[in-house]
Amino acid sequence: MIKLVGRLWRGAVPLTEAFWFYAVGYGLLLNLATSMLFMAVLVKNGSPALLVASFLLPIPYNFLIVVAVWRSAGRYAGPKQWAELARVACVIWMILLTAA
Image 1 (tube, rainbow, N blue to C red):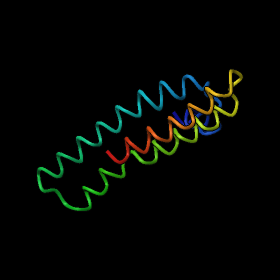
Image 2: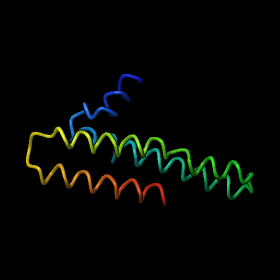
Image 3: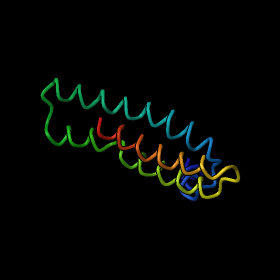
């Protein structure tokens, strides 16, 4: 796990894998799960600290994945427009997932 995080951070994971698997796939699952947790805490009148914690929980992962996609795009050997589109899409996707 630590090794994977290091590879993601360095951009050593292929762009297609970093974008589709880690940003879109896992990003969606993690953010949906934490949104459901947030809503459950809200409905149950949980403490404000727990509300804040459940909202902030996915942010480190989202940040890691934006960095991973950004750096993987820099190493992408294919057409540059795909690398740039992946960068822009990942940033927008993570902002939307975090804010939702």
